[in-house]
Length: 141
Image: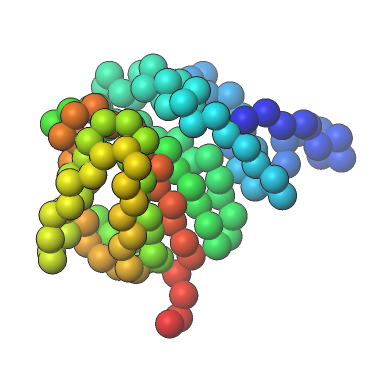
């Protein structure tokens, strides 16, 4: 994703600060467009993949919505956790297994899983995988 500098602040508005591994990026703009294939390749090439077997990049971060691209190596898992709001998980590459207390769901590209708020789950990579995680804000309902 590319963005313009905010001249009034001298920096990027609504952006990460950037690191040696990843440049600063916009997180909250009125219109945002991503090449998920390119983003996935970049994510998989970063050092955290080698160190821990998984990596993530927040693409969008509004107060009520976050979109995160996640890459996980075969055999690795994002251990038991939960999100305060509703989430969706959409594999883009590879195959994952999502475990909840109620059931286990095998997922591949083209599928979508939605979990209600606070549902405990674990995501396991059956093969090298990249998935899009969308997190909604917690609500009172």
